[in-house]
Image 1: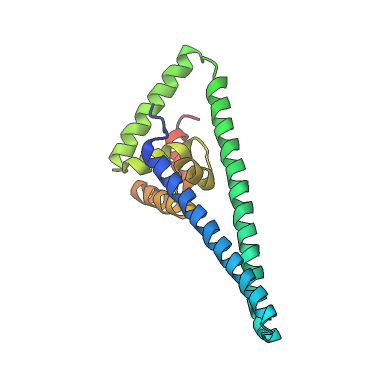
Image 2 (image 1 turned 90 degrees about the horizontal axis):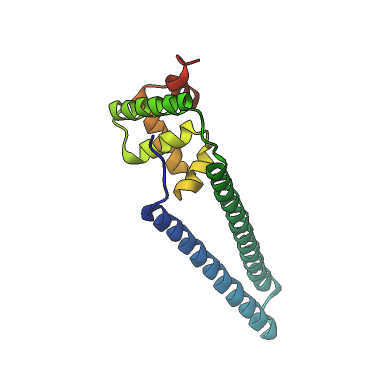
Length: 180
């Protein structure tokens, strides 16, 4: 059975996202500092109230945006750590199933691999297909793969289209419908 593993390409995506976030934080910090200094200079030079108000609004909005960005990054990092921990716990908690269960899993895995091949799924679509079958949400898949959720939506749509299925439930049911 194929397993999705983290590889260097995924970490590059994550690092790009982290770099982008760091650049945004830096930009907001520069805007906040320069706006604050400009407001201070305008007050000391007797600028009009309207001018100072406009700059104060820019300063405040930048401060709020920076706070929101930092909050979302913190929340996202907590969620990523939670997902990693759960994956590790899941891997560690696996008990060795009985032979007939292992045989069934292996056979189902081979069927899934063959079907993915018949549908002509790309490597990315195959990885996403496995994660869908394992029950991960699109958001969780985007976190695991280090890509945008919008990208995962587009790829899952491509999977469903190639499989000529209506959606996630039909996709999962295709593999287990006759077993139950």
